[in-house]
Length: 182
Image 1 (spheres, rainbow, N blue to C red):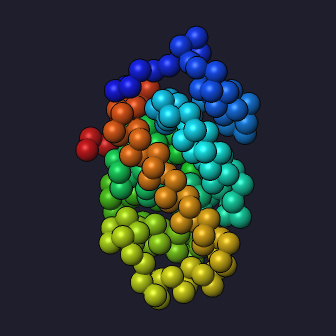
Image 2 (cartoon, helix red, strand yellow):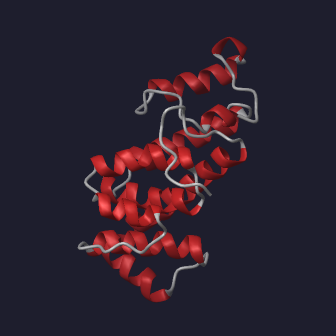
């Protein structure tokens, strides 16, 4: 890691409170990007709360959230994010062939219109930084305003996570596979 990896005994009271809040929350552990964000405790506190919400409390089912996260992780080639969420995506029912297609930067086949829309929306935002009126209207009709706002929140938050993990070289823990090289 490119920043000092703070141990509890090295943390200020403010940093320790942020770390304890994350560990005591729904995650039950210190999320990897928070290791960097703790160097700015206020930012870390706010980011970890947003992360807890977009990870556990949106109106989107876990399968759809994990799909959006995988598209984001692959776009940024964020190994840690990819490995952590590949497992969660499979547990949430995303098929292995879909995960593999995303890993290979191929367009997966989706039997579900909901899956297809999440993939298309996330991919468009990453690829062109915009969403067409047609795609937006279809996603709005299917997910509603709340669901669509939350989908964009998931994509944005996990972009922040991927950038943090990549910038500070918070990589795949020893013994875990490296699913892609770039």
